[in-house]
Length: 358
Image 1 (cartoon, rainbow, N blue to C red):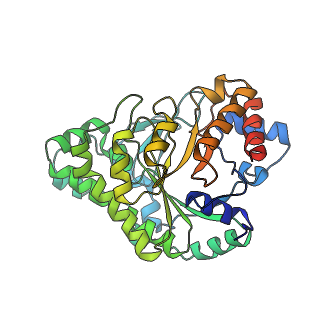
Image 2: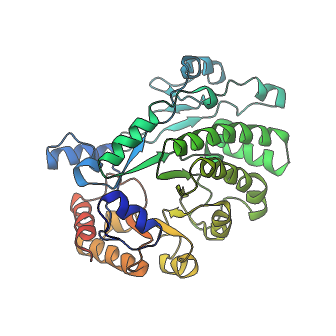
């Protein structure tokens, strides 16, 4: 079957059925967005300008009472000037001028001592959200020949520790404290609803994820992962597949996650992102799992993109696409947001390499 558009090309690639063109994708920090505007003179989203293969579908629209972040002020009463509060009540205080997108988090449930206190906390309720816009968005994206993405990273673990604090939630889990189950379950319930709605609307891709790896080791034991996170991730994926069995599930975790890969596959993950080369060897991971798992990423944002020459970027793109082979299975792209130190010439070299491969 001849591939007729970018959507078909991407889905065939992720299913390891072959592809015609290597897709391009990346994300830019605010400083590089300004550079993009200067270089191109365009007001478009870079994905439209450079022809990404997908577009995001908007999440459910919460009720006004769930959008009222003022109700969380009592949990973080000394929020710094310029700080904001998100819909889960997490405070975000301004970061540095060099990286304005990075914030200092304030955890609203950090000081919670009892389950009763936690049950009084006003979680947003996605079961009562409005999803009527999603199906028309999916249809419009498909009409452009692009894949529709439901993007809901920070799916369980990260959203939960953002609220509780990482140390506190880790201690709850290690102590088998019922507060850990409560907060993880409340977040999972919302994630199941959101995932099912994206799938029901016809999304081709569902992007989940929680950082469970660090630079050189995993963030928690395999036993703890199996107890607290894997069953809940499986529930989210099953909620989506109940509505759309062929939806492709991507999973993001920065860092070293090699010991978790069999667990992720068993939970239903189809595509692993970002396979940081500073933490894991892509060829090794591909040799071990490339017949059952596809990949997104592999071009290092700690090494290759900021510090290689344009020729070095091109060589790395070609090398990784050649590892994946003709069947596909790899969207070769930067492993994370591109930060201010990345030369624009390297971004252009990455784009050209994808366009010229094959």
